[in-house]
Image (tube, rainbow, N blue to C red):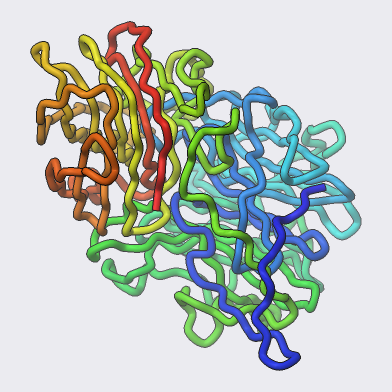
Amino acid sequence: MFEPKTPFPMAMKGDKLMSYKLNNPIIPGYYPDPSIIRVEDDFYLACSSFEMFPGIPIFHSKDLAHWEQIGNALTEENGFHMEKNCGVGGLMAPTIRYNNGTYYIINANFADKGNYICTAKDPAGPWSEPHWMDDVPGIDASIFFDNDGSCYVMGTGDVWDNGTGVKERGIWLAPYDIENFRVTGEPYTIYNSAMRGGASPEAPHLYHIGDYYYLIIAEGGTEHYHAVMVARSKELFSFFEGNPANPVMTHRHMGFKSPIINVGHADLVELKDGSWYAVMLGSRLIDEKYKNLGRETFICPVIWEREWPVFSPETGKIEWSYDGPESLEETVYPEENKFDDFDEQKLSLYMTFWGTPGKECWKIEDSCLKLKCIHQRLDDDLEQMGMEGTLSDDKYAAFVGRRQCKMDTTITTRMTFVPEGQESAGIAIVQAMNHQLHVERACENGKQVVRVKLITADYQQPPYFPGFTSTTNREDICTVEYDKDTIVLQIEMHNEDFTIRYGESEENLKELCKADGSLINPEKVGCMCGTVLGMYATGNEEDSENTAAFDWFRCE
């Protein structure tokens, strides 16, 4: 079983433990769609990972305030495959649950066969290969274990009859044989939406509390009008009664300049002392306009009044901080390593690829991360995204990075690389929908250079809409000659103001240029995904055996 890191000593005042704070977001950066459970004294949380590899990061906490990543549910070991495209496909909306000694994650892989369940005896892994759920359609599937151990599956699909013969999106429920991974009864529609004709009812989570079954869903879409809705019923297979107070949590009424926006997609957890909390996604706004950190994980207390849940009582909105639960002791883990020196033969849990990496495109050797200048571009043109499996073996990039977690962040690396032909390698800021900034070594007109490239995409609608088309724009915004084999590259980000530096050593960096970060974080990108910062190499559609060697990578 997973053993947490040794915690730091607790702050004491006399013989009494001092209170601590739940500071939002509790998991900063691109970690959306949180689902949470408590198993005895431990809390576990799973998040969406979309097109990142490995998939579904798993976090652990003792106090709800401090979290450490302990694993990823989907890896190469259990056959996970993902393809790089636009940053809005892949794995989304997992639910993690525990029953009788087994952990379950139910999720959909929109780059593969759809809905699946993975199991584990330890949330840190290993997790089983996916049990594909061919009889479970739609999106945002979830499972529910009732008090007697019986299991049910639910999901979102066009199941609600609006009286005109046209089916609308709603929430369905069916009994499920968890031992054999199959539906054993007819699906029953239990809810449609809290608001008449409400947009995108999805992300169902079911609980049996007291005399009622409670259904929590997201509604309004995952952007500005996102919200948490609650319904209840004393019987499972009946139409659920909506809470008159719906939405029970949202920030859509607070305007487009609220510092926390897009709040929704919640999951509940009960503490040993009977108190309740909810985790949900939200986004922090930069300069009243941009959401480059994507959707992050927030928390709030929940109380019960008249047999309905009340989220963040008294204020009704997500606060930046809450008092920690009195029944829990603060457990602080050692600060996450901000420096990767590649001395070990495996990458840190928080490091991520964009798509399942080809076996030939990376390795750790001689205390360096070596990335091959493969044929595939980092800035490929966007393609139409389908909701069915369209797996290919070449939709990936030689890109390794980590999610941006702070608005003020600096990334630095030392790279040894001599480009030839169209090859390039360096560091990149990668946002959804092919909005990127590259700082790279390249060869231009027979000369060795350092250059800054801006990549944006023009399109009229998201890639999952029919008729999607896109045009990729690539612009060199700064170029200088540089003929040394080894170079230190740095991007300093202060909100949307970027400063790019280069040099032979970290002690001798020169400013290359400034860049406007808002150009890669326009509002039209949306916020389903967040910024990933990392290292890359590419042949830019030419085959090459050349490699770029990264001595270290620091993100602070």
